[in-house]
Amino acid sequence: MRKFLENILLSQAKRIIAKHKPLIIAVTGSFGKTATKDAIFAALDDKETARMSIKNYNNEFGVPLTVIGEEAPGSSLMNWLSLLLAGRRALSDENYPKTLILEMAADRPGDLQKLVDVAPPKISIVTAVGPVHLEYFLTEENIAKEKATLVKVLPQDGTAILNGDDEIVDKMRELTKAKVITYGFGENVDIRGADIQRKADGVGFSFKIHYDGKVIPSETNHLLAEYQIYSLLAAFAAATALGKNPLDAAKRLSEFIPPPGRLKVLPGIKNTAIIDDTYNASPVAVRGAITVLKQAYPKARTWAVLGDMMELGGDSQVMHEAIGAHVFKTGINYLATVGERSKDSARAARDAGMSEDKIFRFERSEDAGRFLEDEIIPGDVLLVKGSQGARMEKIVKELMANPLDAPMLLVRQGKGWE
Image (cartoon, rainbow, N blue to C red):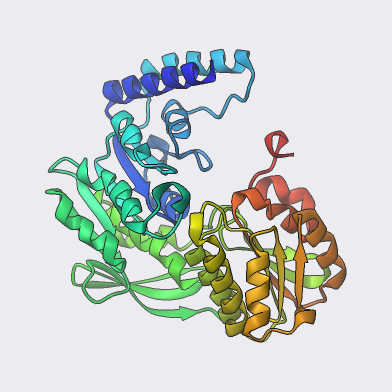
């Protein structure tokens, strides 16, 4: 029954787009999708005529929900009927958004084709290709082919915005006759971030955007990692593709706040700081977050609190081991792991030279949260990260200074996740 209703939803969304013909900006990639989607919306000067993906609605169920403008109905049949009626109303909505910014994800081969069949993009952005969902894709080459779907379907008068620092993504320029805009930190990209300086308190950067022979000073007050600036550069590229004023776009991006669970710094109990990166985890993202922890807080006592990385297939053990070795190499003071897979990280950290009394293993995130509540001291900084199934946000909720703010600040809150 649910599959039948979802097919109706897809059909409704396709009809809505065919009738209203909004300009569709599609964002895909192995990581950075949600932040890039949110940053694009932040860069716009006409937000009242635009709509972006709700939360992380990025699959064959979530994208139609965004097209209709509603949230998930849960299991209630009445809510489903109400949703389908909302789809019918959207068909006749004279004030339907002129621009849709849609995050598009793929768990299995062919997922993106289903999404672009419903919502064909005029502007496609590919953020990166990395080892995620290998259980189903098997190789990064297969992941790249899937992500390239968004580039291949572009019309000739469309625009492909590609991460020029990612060699695999950059090669996708060969797959389209549409205009190509590259972004990144390298010398040969069209929109380049340069002269990046971290602010004194560790959070935020000043930097310059080199674009079309011009240099635009810019800054960000809420980002923790240099690589998060990629999302701002992609958003700036999208704004220019839409004909927005570059100076205005850069100014609006300075106040961009990352979405929940993406390297977001939160105050913790006992005057500690928590880097909440609990939305999801892949080997590349975990390594990057560990490095950022030490870069942003070089003098603090640091904790890497890491849950299992999932859907890595046969590479799971070696990838978890590499994370453990990286924790020790980076100079993190303490490691706490959650889950069966992450025991490989703990063992590898010990084998690399980390003292056994600085490594702690837990089966459940709740147990880790209670342990850390007793162990942390003022001034500690904790990175909390893991795949969705590890439910690492429970640790953040246990340790955050204002747990009543959890519904607004953390991922996976509410009745559906309790």
